[in-house]
View 1 (cartoon, one colour):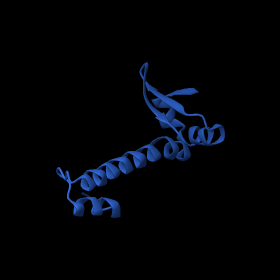
View 2 (tube, helix red, strand yellow):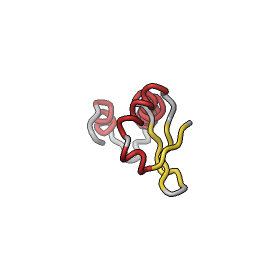
View 3 (cartoon, one colour):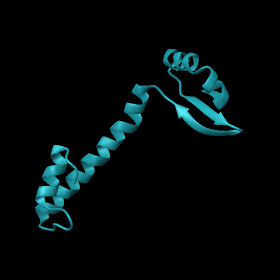
View 4 (cartoon, helix red, strand yellow):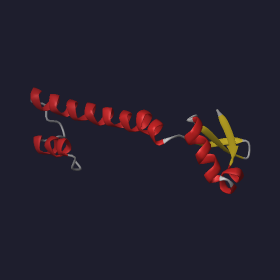
Amino acid sequence: MEEVNALKIRNNLGEILDRLDRKGDPIFISKGRKIRAVLVTPEQFERRFLDWQAKEDKMRFLNGVKRLRKGRKGTLSSLTVLRQLRGYEG
């Protein structure tokens, strides 16, 4: 994996993005001597982070449904669970 400092990113962003697209390897961005960020392709971001977040949301929803089935509502009502299923804020 490649490491690039913040100044080079600022001066050569287009070239670095092309390199990221071509190689597909994440690029570490450093400032000073410390790595501060990582550039990844949109596909890598989706695979690693959005899918993980969707799984977390699904598990949270299923746990709410299970609590409702057992009769232990806790803080969730059936209306709240239904709103979460439809994508509204709970």
